[in-house]
Image (cartoon, rainbow over all chains, first blue to last red):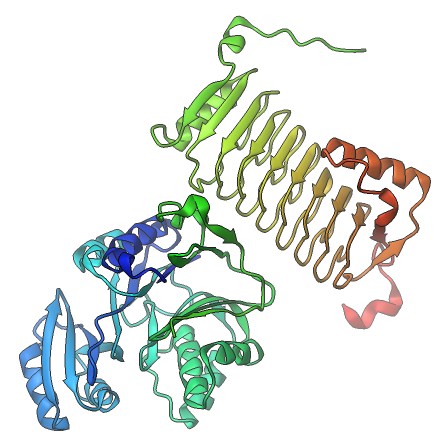
Length: 298
Length: 240
C-alpha cells in the first residue's frame, strides 16, 4: 500500500493554505499507510542560507550544542529553530558540507533534508497524529509532498519513512518496492552518493540526485530511471522549483492527478483530492505508465 | 413468458430517494441501497468513497453524482448504477447482472471477473480492463490501457478508441472488438474474421450502450484466442 499526496501551487494566493490543504489530503491517505508518515514543504527560501532539517533519536540531544559544534567545525554562521523533535538548522555557508558533518558527527540524529527551500518532517505512527504534532496545517509554501507508509522493504523507523532526500532541495516519495536497489546503491556509492539507510526508496532518491548532478533535468533523470530502476513504483518528486510524477511501465501502484489554473495535485486515490478548492472544475486524469509528468515554476 | 414486477407500497415510497454522503456514512448509504427492492436513488457527495453501491441485489436505479473510489457497483445484481464522474480501481468488479454506466473515465481493473450484465464507460479505461472476464459485456467509448482481457473466459469487450499493450493475453473464449489501433496483442490473442453473427452481436452491444448508427460495425476488428495455450504441448516444454 502506502499513500502519496502532492500539491504544487501555481497561484501564489494559495501559499498560506499549503499546509492546511496538504494535511487534509494526508488525512485521507491514513488507511493506506498507518505505520509512519512524513512531508516535505518547499518555501521560505532566503538567498545564501541553507536549511538542514534534522530529527533527533535521543531526547537528550542538545540542539544548541550541535549548532555550536557545527559552526565551529565549518566556520559558518549557524542558527536553529525547533518543532517538537525536529530542528531546522540554518547555515550561512556550504550547506552540503554542513549536512555531511551532521551525518558523520551527530549519530543521535537523522538528517532529513538540506537546501534553500526544502524542509522535511517525519514521524512514526498515526499520520494524523504526526501532522498535528508537527503543525503541518500551519505551514505555508509553494509545494508539498506527503507520504503515509505501510512498511515492506525496511523497518518502521523515522529513517525509513518518506520523503527521502539525498540531494539539495530534492525529495522523493514512493509507493511500491524496488528489486535492484542493493546493486544500484553500490554503483551510486562509487559515484559519490551517500546513503543513511538500507531502504530501497533512498536509492531511488540518490539515483535522481546523481543524474541531476550529471546535468539531467528532473524530467530527464526520470526518463533514465525507467531504464535503470527495476521494480514497482509510483514516484512523486520535488525539486526547488519543480514537481514530477512517474509510474512504472505496468502501473502497479495507483495514481490520480488533477490540475486547475491554481494548482497541480497528486493522490494515490481520488479521495485525497476531493476537498481541494476548485476540484469540481479540475482536469482529472490517471497518469499513464512509464510516462514522465513534470511541472516547473521557472 | 413475460414477467410483471409489482412494486410494494414501501418500494414506491423509496422512489427518488436522495442520499447525501456529506451527512450519511458510507455504511448507511450502502445498507439503504442493499435493502431496497425497487425505486430510484440519487447519491450526492461521493468524494471518492470506496465500495459505494457494492453488493446490490435488486432492480433499483442508482445515480451517483460525482467521482467514486474503488469497487463501485462491485458484485452488482440487477441494479442499474450510473456514475456522473470518474470511477477508481475495480468498478463493477465481479458484477453478475444489471448495468453500470461510468460517465467519466474508469481506473484499473474495470469489470474484472465480471460474470454478466453490461458495463458502459463513456471515457477511457486504464490498465487491466476486464481481466478474467467471465460473461460480462463491456463497452468503452474511449481508449483502454494495457493488459485488457487478460485470461478472459467469456463475454464481450467493445472499444471505440485504441487499446494498449498485450491486449487479450492468454485469452480463452471472450470476444474483443476494437475500432482503433491496438498497441500490441498478448500471447495467444489474434485478429479474427468478423462474420455476420459478430456484426449482429456488436450492433446489439453498441445499441445497448447508447451508441448510435454513426458508429459503423465494419470499422471494428475482432480479436480472440488462437487456442494454442489450451492444452499442454510438448513443443512448449522449454517455456514452462
